[in-house]
Image 1: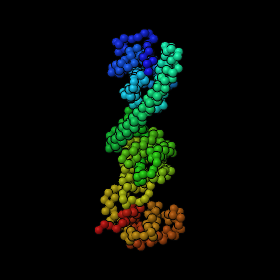
Image 2: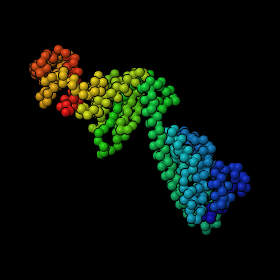
Image 3: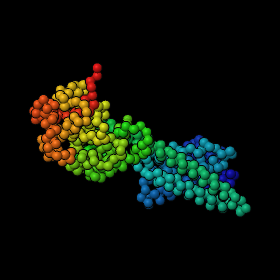
Image 4: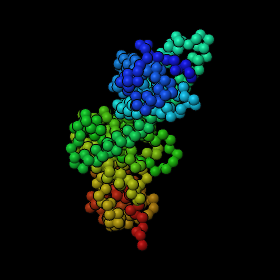
Length: 438
């Protein structure tokens, strides 16, 4: 497009030395622009892009948007404008100049890390495009013969729009790629920080650390996973919505969600204590059917956080054992005392059979008796409470307790703690009653 070569700075043409002293673009780009569009048009583009960049930065400041350093914005604008002039003038069009400059990539990276929305960056791209387009149209209207204006400006406008669309698309793609990389880095940093604090390291400062949590406040921690390998849409969104909903319910001020190797860490914290029954509220909160949860004990201060994480890990280990019961929620308060006992599952299986004797036999009838006796011992030997839980008559509860005594060969009240422990193990890990391997 020959008309581009007619552009000249308002104050008169620059020398090559003046261009080099005023321009911020790489020398090789300047040399290519001078070769393709000429020294006057290159000088004009440098001058216009500087004014356009400053105008857009002023609008951003007025609108309260975060701004980038003037050098970065001006250099990125200048490079993009020179690339545009080369692209619309070169014959054939030089596709290499449709790439993003290093400065613009730096602006995108900084925007992602500052949490700047993509719309703000795209508005900047389109704002500078609009200003430079208007400047070019006004200048060409002044210098072009009347009979050439309409066709030339129409062609130029279409070329500039195509270039701006391509540029905005590349900015959006770079933003998405940087966001993925930043999230990956941030997630890994958060995960390592949690592991270090649990192992005894001092927690990082809230302002300078990657987690932004109130360490002296309340904490609740859980681990989530799912068994299905496919067919679950929008897993990340579902987990995020679940975590946010729980956070509102229990009074959390900060929710941290970290996915790592098939397990998602869920951490709720607040500057003060969380709801007194936060763990119970989490256990009963509506969740996707595919979600499995291992909930640690809620705690206070850094020590409470460490206990919450360690408890959740022990609980998850129990839940993932091959003998484990089919249930979606596991709580440390219910199985934490059993976790260490099943480190040696062969010994745990022997212990259950030894304590329960014939009560460890197969069949649903014995399963009902074991469940009733477990509830009976957990309730402090209350037939009334167990009857209400199971919707039975108190006499039925008494009958089952008596039958258990017969099967044990001694009264249930004798060695009741050992019996309860064995029943709780069987309830959590039914597989412990499977026949021993030959």
